[in-house]
Image (cartoon, rainbow, N blue to C red):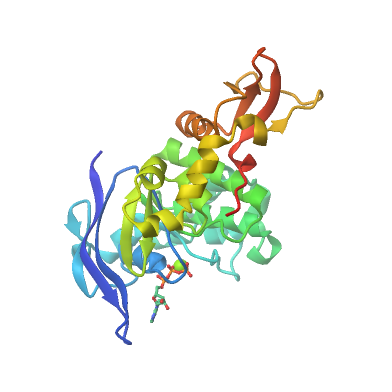
Length: 316
Ligand SMILES: Nc1ncnc2c1ncn2[C@@H]1O[C@H](COP(=O)(O)OP(=O)(O)OP(=O)(O)O)[C@@H](O)[C@H]1O
Ligand SMILES: [Mg+2]
């Protein structure tokens, strides 16, 4: 994988002198899906805004495709980076269509091309063309989020920055949006930096998860690296690791699965697992196979339930 974005000794503070980002060193490869997690105020949004030069670092450098960000033509840079802002931020006086193709106006595309693009993108995010003439106020929270994603994709950017894009929707809608985004990521191969404060979302979506605190990157890695090889007490506590790992390693799938009803239709494509495997093994299978559900079998090979990550409920 080739390097796409690199932070080198980046620091940022505001007038009051408080350090917001403290010597950030980090590299993101082309095509990676990075999730950024950490407490409110730790600097996640600030880090994102540095990438598309909405703000400038006080010191240090950010490189994109090996070229220092300040040497990029700003228009070209913004076009190659899609941005889904925290709280969606659709333009309320514009229709869905105008919102989606907004960036193309900057690119001086003609009307027909814009229309085609809007149709293509609205379908891509799981809505139909009838939404294009609506205004943001006529949409549900989840629909707004979808339009936000469509807008970020409009300029066909290499990099997409997403700041808690699914923060404001209910759990079921969020799961749907997450799955669709993962599918899009697979199909389009974009590089995504995705901010979230939901641990499950961070691990589900990210190839790597970056944990921040007080303007520092504390640790980055895969679920296994962060859970099994925490570099510090802070990482351990953040993910509630010790107890959580004990829970995952001791609980069987059978204890948390959703039992099958006779009427349940079972997809023949579901991966089968034994009911006695532990949650930690089931999670691995889910992550590695990119499946959402597993079909749980008892020792006599009878189908007895469905397991998905949402069955895991753990309260410290
Ligand atoms: N324009 C600004 N002027 C002064 N301080 C700012 C400014 N923007 C952000 N900050 C401060 O910088 C810190 C980091 O802000 P940032 O928005 O990056 O946090 P965050 O991790 O995205 O938080 P959240 O999860 O709540 O969105 C906060 O303490 C915030 O108050
Ligand atoms: Mg933020």
